Image (cartoon, rainbow, N blue to C red; front, side, top):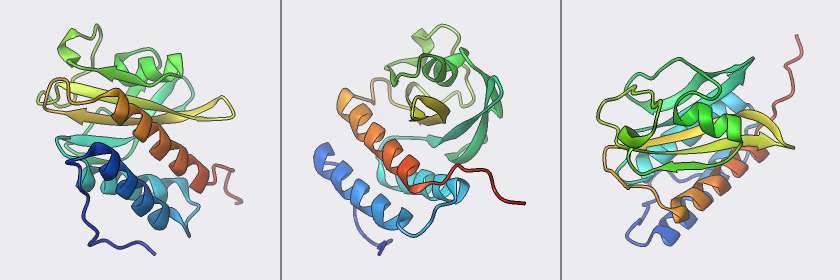
Length: 168
């Protein structure tokens, strides 16, 4: 059962991410809807991870990513594959860490306060579902440890969510 009062101690990132993973598992345990799960995942990450100003999902629709549930300031709604950090991570199907978005050619600035970014592609059996995107106002905020931990978080989200078309 999910405990909303559980603290997250990121003084040791490994411990903070372990606590976060346990909380996410409890939060997603009895829900299969991908939008509901994305909304709760984004809210949990935003509340738990220090020094971030935006976290959310973009889902693949045709040849572009369309914003899904997120926490933070209003976001860019559509991102073509290959454009910006999200579009590049989606096209490459690889996690991207950008220490300073000002140095990333083609960066799309939705929030001028964002300085670093981490994007994890959401893949199920090599099929691109979308991306999980985190921004920080602090340059160099994200590390390989963050990337690996958030890849596990993304996998937990994917495993908990049913992406089959809804019966109508």
